[in-house]
Image (cartoon, rainbow, N blue to C red; front, side, top):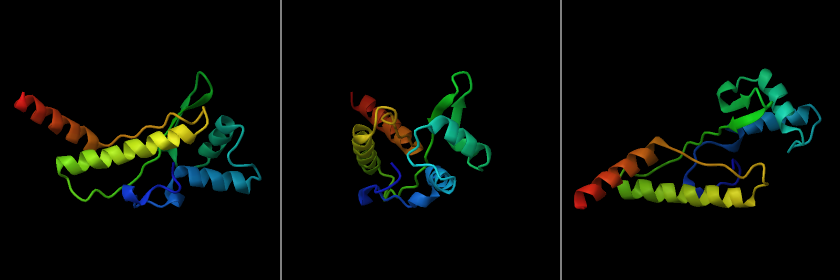
Length: 131
């Protein structure tokens, strides 16, 4: 998800700035393969010595990673409703393509943005006025 993103997304954050890059470097330094076959225990061990606390959440009862968050900084040229919704659709396609290509344990990525919420709310409001 973090590497080789299409330029149409205008991502301003480089792939080395994501927590997964830090985790990959840690695995490599620890002489372990990436991707790892023991993700949960490896990421838990890495996480305990990392400053990336807000990006990985663990399900203590099940002993596994519940969610891992990656933040992207994109560049939206305009705040106009049509531009925001079109940009959201680009993200929809990108995430769907990456999920389709991912393994079954890594194919549930999704994206969200305050801009999507605002635009969808505005679009719904305009639609209800027209009706």
